[in-house]
Image (cartoon, rainbow, N blue to C red; front, side, top):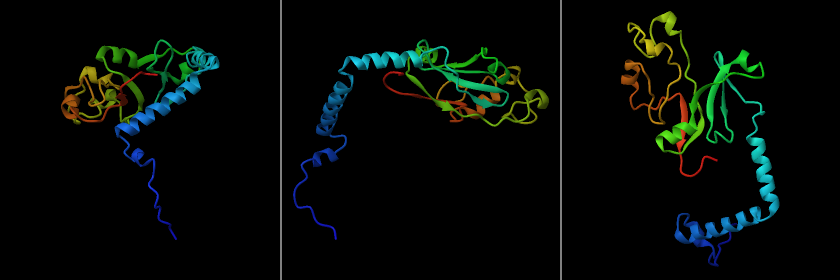
Length: 191
């Protein structure tokens, strides 16, 4: 039922995906495509119009509702990587919410000299409040809540570890991958 192909495939060299010849061919095709798409004056007009819309301050922030707060990743001309921020649902409904910045990816990238890119957030399940239980969520039941732990509901410093002001949390989670937010180091530009 299947016929055998006897002629040699002229493009067999493309099968070596990381080969020098295949990569050169891809770069040439990409250059042709970019030139065809961006070569006319209309491209610059469309790009500028789209950028104005994407950077507009009057956009409706898309939110993720978690507990008593709503969260939003806001990107604009001043924050091309984004601001992870939060407010209460009642404040969000006012039309002019007051946002608390949870993480400024642009400031983090500048401070750490890395190209951090937002990949989303994972919310940890919350148990009883430290104020009512006298302990933080990961510390043993007999351990009192350190003062810095009681207000520390969102802490993260890097993609490879959870940072916390609670010494017991720090000791148990050093080197773990249980961060509350997720971002990645990538080469290139933020946009």
